[in-house]
Image 1 (tube, rainbow, N blue to C red):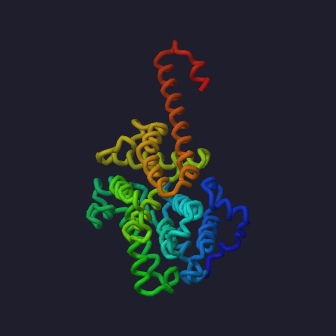
Image 2: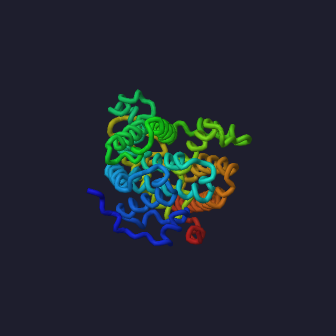
Image 3: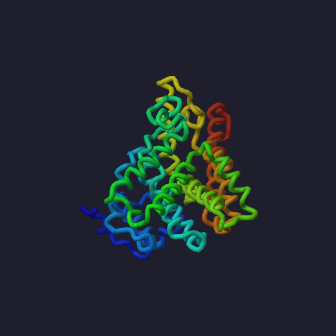
Length: 339
């Protein structure tokens, strides 16, 4: 009963491209993404080092894929994207020299699992609508707690437990680490986690468990929101997907007389304004902090983020010019078309 997606033979070119932020994440079918995730475990030496049974790894990945819903944004392809960016950072920033194989396995596996069974409605909605998840987790990161619970539900099946050959103590530590990382992806904790990381930057100590945990939290956070670090032709599709999911939520909130966040409201937000704010105030400060520890981040992320910011500022300018023209027919249309 081993899944049959191993019929995909990955070329050396594909394996090399998988280690770059230019990798086109839209070009692959779900079965191919499973094969690519599987390759990551082999290329990092995790299968040998953690004594992972090959068929268990296949079953684990397939079960994970089955537990992602068909949301516009929070779906299996998003999980693949986040994991692939972590894989890029591991190789480009030479994390192989800084982390144990077990830590690398935790980073990769937490990325794969971090949004499991996401319902397509965020924590604010869960709390305001008093959903079953919000009630179960007492309004404290209900989604992230749920993603963790589903992850370990999958790992509780012997045929899917990629950590089965580790000791009880090792599994307990891995479980604790994965929970820390998945819970760190709650954007409500963004400022707290980033400030904590910045305080450690001047004297970062790889031998300190506290420092390492903070770094791992920053790494998964960076990967989770890294779409704008990719080429525009790859990243822009994700913005469309996210807006679709946001609008679906805000439409329901309006129908149910629940509070609506302005950045989710189709009547108040545009793609350029949403992305400009997110890049300026969330992405750039996060990746600039990470760049202090890993100068490679300049090329992997910061260059692309600045290009994306310019791209959306131009789009915003064009939209404003069009609005002015529509309100003032005497305006010079040529200035709009020139852009």
